Image (cartoon, rainbow, N blue to C red; front, side):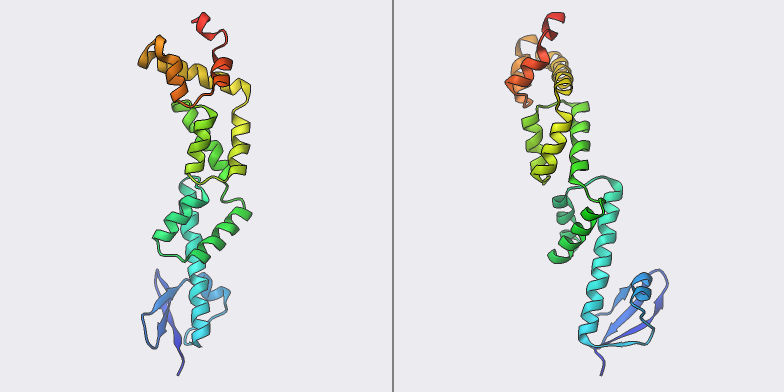
Length: 201
């Protein structure tokens, strides 16, 4: 007796695979076609398990692509979300490796966007921003590459002066420097950003 059998197509779900002992599952039409399967085809246990894994990889990629379509993610964020969906660690790792090779998953892009968005709303120093990226799981190489690109001297001056203006309105001129330090700006960044700025104010 065969271990499993491919049944007819269920509209909107795909082709059902029934198991002699256990619950049936569905495979999508693209998997059905790509593996040259046929309705009524009987499967051994090994073939059934392989088919189930192929479908799981396909579903995992589709799920990951859905998340990436909404916004950039880190590998850590996707791993956490896909794990919650029940995908196995090995399938998740393979999926993310493939997406990274295809440049569909990019922690460098994620880091750039995170820095740009944060600096527009509430500017912070490089040290604090590096900590934020690390907490999100951005690998050190991509984080440093993005930080180097967006924390050149001209940008630092802009960040510090914007943060200074925000802090002055919030805590008053006498506490501005302390507030800048809390925002993660180093002594060098503060000195660079405020050189001649306070006097012009």
